[in-house]
Length: 351
Image 1 (tube, rainbow, N blue to C red):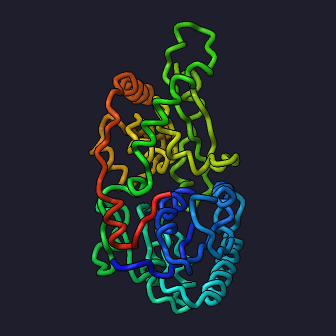
Image 2 (cartoon, rainbow, N blue to C red; image 1 turned 90 degrees about the vertical axis):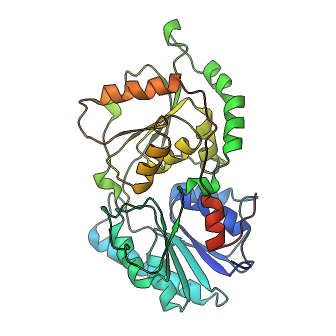
Image 3 (cartoon, rainbow, N blue to C red; image 1 turned 60 degrees about the horizontal axis):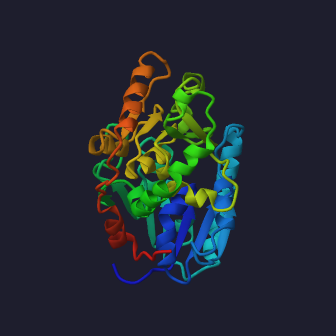
C-alpha cells in the first residue's frame, strides 16, 4: 500500500501493543490510540518512551473479568462504545481503525463515519467479537491456519484477507532472543540455589501462569499447579498481569528466549516461545488454528496437554523434558507474516 493513513489503533492486550508498536512508529502523525485499563498495558504505556511516539490516547475499561456480572458487562460495553465514538469524532482526520479482537471499537467507528474498519483475529473461539466484526468491519484479517471447524462464519466472506504464519512472527526479534540467551543463561543457573548436587544441572524453566477472566479462557483453563510441584527443574515463575516493573512487559517476549524451556497456560506466551525455538509445554484446553500450525511446523518445540485429568500427563512432561535435553538448534525458519501485514496495514519502523 502507499504512505501512512491516519489511524486509530486499539490495544486490548499486551500482545496487541507488541504487534502494533512497529506500525505506530511507522504510522501517520495524526494517529491516535485507544488502550484498555489492564495492568500490563498500563505498565507498557508508562514505559513507552523510545518504543512508540506520543499520540493522543483514550483509556477504556474491559467488559470482562471474574467479578463482573452480565448487567455490568453490558453497561461497560455501552459506555465504552459511547466514549470511543466521542473520541473518534474529536479527531476528524482519522480515516481508519485497526483492532485485534476488540470489536466494540468497530461499532464506534461506524457511528463516527470512519470508512475503513479493520478487524484482525487469530482466536476462533471469540464468537461474540466475530459476530460484531461481521456486521461492522470493512476488512477482516485471518491467518491461513484459521480453523473453520471452530468458527466458520468467515468462510465465504469476501472481506477476508489471509496472512501466513502467526502474529508473533511480526514483532519478535529472533536474533535478539539468541543474544539474550547466550548472555544470560549461565548467570541464571549460577544464581539459582540447589540443595542437591544431582539437581544442579536441571533445566531452567520459565513458568507463565494465566489467571483467566478473559472473555473466552474460562473454559480453557486447567488447574495444574499440583501436577508440577515435584518436577526436577528450576522454575522462574511469573503470573499474567503481574509484571509492573520498568520494561518487564515490553521485554518479556525477548526474555523468554533465555530459558531452557517454557511451561504455560497462555497460548500467546507459548507461541512466542516456540518462534524463539524454546521447547514449550502448553497446558490448556485452548483450540486454535495457529497452534495446530506451529505444532506441525515445529513438532519438537511445542507440546500440548489439553485434559483436566492428570492421567498420561507425566509421559507428556517426560517427552517435553527430553526435548529440552536435546535442544541444540534454535535457528528457526519463520514465515513472511511481517512483510505480508506491511502490504496490508502499512509501513513498519524499527525501534
